[in-house]
Length: 560
RNA sequence: UCCCCGGUAGUGUAAUGGUAGCACCACAGAUUCUGGAUCUGUUUGUGGGGGUUCAAAUCCUCCCUGGGGAACCA
View 1 (spheres, rainbow, N blue to C red):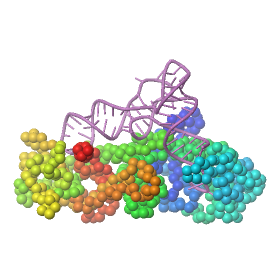
View 2: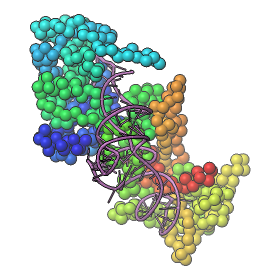
View 3: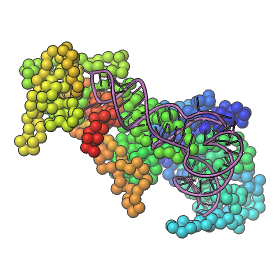
View 4: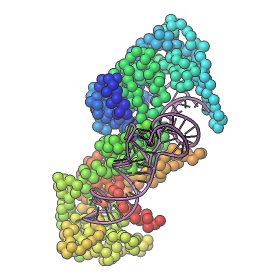
């Protein structure tokens, strides 16, 4: 793609570069759109050009001003700026009308009285017949194709002024009804539709079609390169036809493949149903691939941009592993996120030889990757919470956390040795772990150079802050959610365990004042972001992505 | 069926007639107060057949295979 742009520059075909992002304001932006946004803005930037934002709002039915605002917010959040170059195709309606008149005068457009069903039949559309072989014959000319220029002009003016019912007439380009590319078989330019438009109201009852509107809008803005997804490839001859016949600024359309991500659905229809059926909590549910959802999940604009630059641009239909996106987030947050200690599934630990009632303050590093981040003080006493997973009896092979008789280091604390446990007599579940600590190991150092293999995280019980923590998994267990067995409703394939709420978690004291949007690494657990649901006394955290967990791999291997 | 576009390690992406490279994943080791991070190393690839050429991922041809189109949506 960049090569194509470069060659246009080198050959003098275009001076400078101007691209555009043309969303239709009828839905929420998702990660697939983010790819397009990154491409159009980055390509422009790479060649010292600019990118326009243009709302492709020529279908009044589903468009709304609320989407305009949401789209603008999401693009800005992603880190891109269109300055004052904010345009609307609906501002070009008068210009587009004039261009249609021009085509009529050149004998290249005509008013057609065929119904939509008849139009389809005349075009040669094969009837969608399940397992039958269908045949696409050459199209037939409409009986109205050879109206005079004067009559067409008159009828088109009548269409605009509201003389005809919705759907009664269309304006069509006169190209070639036998063209092998069905897009070229006299495409519809204008249709009659009495539907108030969110911007122009009821001032128009005819609306231009995409194929006609897009090249002309590009021309109006002096777009040098109209970058779009593969599905428009087949429309390119038509795009060029309008440029040639309307004699306007020649933009070049170049296509690239859409983004697909494993375990993720991006179709508008699917996302809408997930929301409408209450499978997710809304468009910004942290499991949603919308930019709003990713933001709430804790994805950063930087990580998404990094992801886009890593997957590249090509014309191959691809399915990108969601793990690459996760990798990009981890990479950034590892460098930048302050560390904190939190216990998701607490297990009480008592240090029997700790001086009763004593509380010490211990120093903890805020970010080992960033010395400038400094350190903080953590309270420590004889009663702590540790992660339930960090104690096992009997221990599985290669397990080097806590079990009776074994020693571990409490991160930034002391080395402790497990002396015994208390069990729930009814369930046999471990309720309390007893340990002795070694006073010589304060801060976690071992003066005798003994090697303690395990280091676990903890929270001092009396000062612990109660947290709600939400864990997420793929919304779809299938790599390709679209591959649903015949007869199965895809909604039934949604991963029931994609969201897990842990209401009994505890965090270190500093977490009490976390602000929504703030990102932390909870040591040994993953990266978490403070959710907007947070209230004064009760922080809520979403796990954005877990840390790489090589123990989980060992465990899995052992089970196999 | 017709028309259009693709096919390079598991995934994604380079190489535009001249040594098939990079990243992620995976695996192994080193190191480590996060089983994190970091470092080192390893495995794996041009869909298939034929042709042109001193030389083919690249050009030609046939086949296989994936995607898109056949809206008065964009």
